[in-house]
Length: 93
Image (tube, rainbow, N blue to C red):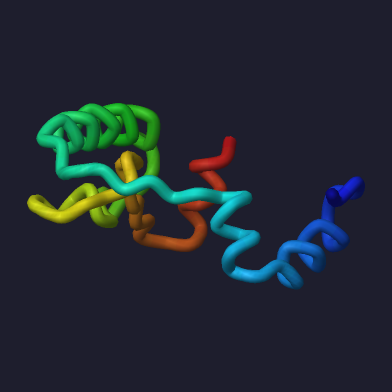
């Protein structure tokens, strides 16, 4: 087992086989769930409020949970697109 944090850990992970990585980081797929759309809408609303002072180009529901009818990881993924690089500073303050 790795005892250090940083590059040493990354090097050890890079040397692992796919089987070892799957055991360490298992991915469980589930059937499509209609609640994901509502979860995304709620998160989108919270992001719009939190980023009110930022020029957001678009907030999108991405990944497999955004596609109806397919198996997915039970994680709603969201992409926030910022119009200008300078706006990123406003997101971190």
